[in-house]
Image (cartoon, rainbow, N blue to C red; front, side):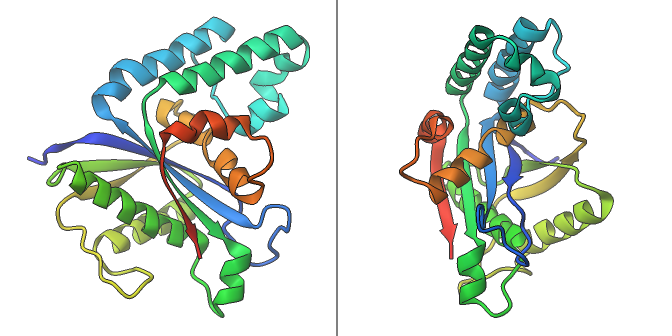
Length: 243
């Protein structure tokens, strides 16, 4: 029987991972890995999110989505109509994130620098995946979680995309695909990809969705006010920028 891991990891992205026609306004790709201790996630994270949703909606079926909250669209359109309500909502959401315990490991791929440095650059998503898995693996081994089975939860994007992502994930973990001169062995921990439907109402994926964009903006505009990043900063254990 596989020993269950002490952690569950939710992954979200922000930005286009293509290297053609790079957007000068956002020339990066961010992959954010949000790591929760399983017991903490079950007994703390989920219940806090449910309490927040019921407070503002009287049900828990709304999906927290950073883009929709920021643009005040869909389930968040009510934020346009009442300034006091909007401020309370955002303050409560910020406090919620502060009080939920998780760690963030983020990979920032600077696509402009990548294409300038390499004639045939690797796919930014694949690069982010490799670096993220390696960093988290080393941290879990350091935490003495060797021998565990750890699940990485991704949001479904489509069968073709999901199949390609799973193939790349397994190639990395088997040592069959990497960038860099040094071999990396994932022999002490079993990593497994899991794909969740956008409508699954996953607490972990919703929290991960709130992290990637602020991290990217902090890299691009470090001197600009970034309240969302300030809230996340204490949870960020490492940000790797490549190249």
